[in-house]
Length: 518
Image (cartoon, rainbow, N blue to C red; front, side, top):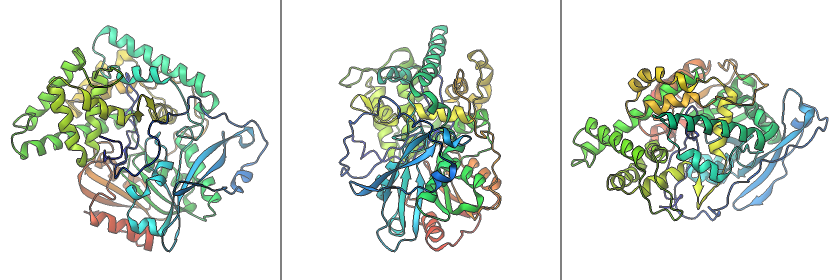
């Protein structure tokens, strides 16, 4: 099973920040095996060093032009942005940018973001043929950038790869005093590591600052308005841009939308319910196909999976991993939820669960590694760390471990299978050493923006459909397009109704009918 043959939709888990392991929001791409990048290339061990004070004004940053150089089939460059928009002359960081040129009659630049927070956006341009249909690639330069703190854009760093391995493998639902103490120690180690290894960058990777970066990028691309396609967390980033720069919004599509008004607790409850819905849909399909190996009903299948996780919690499973790693319950959790992002990946979940029931954790371990961008013993990006820093910088609210049990009833009602894990996730921001300086509590309505197309999928696990409805209601100029289906995000999922509506808007400027159901 190669990374290129694991077909996974654009992924985000913007509120999934767990106590034992970092919540992960990354992109795993599928297709053929033509990608010639070295999958074993590890992430940089140290974040980029910000340039020192230079006295530049914000206008100076806006006046820059990107110097493009050839990189495989694309063009690559860097964008200088202030490390602190409240003090633009205090220093700068460089953002990685990648552009796939339009193949036909060019309309302009389409800036894209795959989600996360933490996913490198340059990969979205690199893999534009996976994300976008020919019609869009013909009409637009696809421009991806690594948001500040991610990928090759002054990446935050918190743990060594070995320490990150242990962090991810830890029990995300600690149920003994010893496990609770380990969770506390892991959190302390994570945040102290972020402060030591990331420095000043760690306090300047908020969504608001990333949205400000997008406007500098718009200017550097010599575009009067920003045409934008954001997936998952990228919808939050796009909506934030619309609030900050409504007069600069061009044609904007927000797919797999999040509700920007949700508190961390309500967001976690929403997502717990979403993953439970997705798991039940997977099990219903298994039962409907006949002779389901997990049980003869959805409830029976849920019991089988819960019992399996309990067994793995007690005794990790052996695997064929060359490093001798076992499948812990933390790794099993990520291996279980990853295939729920796309119906195309349910067969991988079949394989992983069948093996695990026979005592072999190999496939679930592989799936967990894909989720964490771990390849050949190294992490190829910093998405595991970036998601926590960005989420907690945006909203540092959290509870203490002692307060978690009181949350169980609500979370177990939302998700009998995953609820306790999501409840423990509410402790994730305990001890964050950074404080945002740039409007983290921005109220978003995008008043004055051009029409914004919001896409939602009815059984989306990571960004439940109700959140797309909420975002469309909150953005003054939004129209909602709904896909009735499984998996995360709606565009380019073999639904011509959705795709035609998106293409008519982005290419021709025809705004879809609000409430269109596909």
